[in-house]
Length: 194
Image (cartoon, rainbow, N blue to C red; front, top):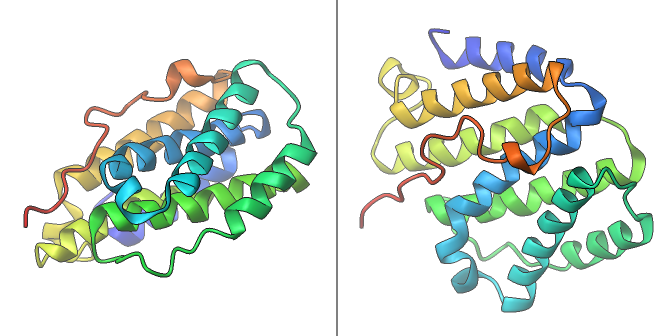
């Protein structure tokens, strides 16, 4: 891939090849990395009850994956209602960690909807969530990911390769939390120095 457009086309096709039994895994794999990216600022940006809720939802979904549990629809609905009450409007989406918090909330919303209706379609947007956070970081440095310099950024390429590798792995294996950091060489994006 030589540019962002080629990546977008490749990932759009690739995510449709994730077996249905690994879709929840893929979502949690992406969201776990977002959680790691924003964890130092999570408590500063959200009330503790909201931070606890985000972690509780992600932990519950990992537990369902690991134990091959059918998700409890009542629990999912309760999570969904509580998640909808989180006010993310004060987040500064030009800040890397706050952008990650926003993407985490949106991504959890998508996964909870998937758990409720079992309809795929969230995968492309979820894959883009980490790209959006990396884009935020690069914009802060005056770099545009649509340019050669931006597209060739180490963090961007690391994320693209991680996504494509985990999708390939998911085609032939039933994945669980033992793979939650698979293909993540550096599990946290370095925030832009102030």
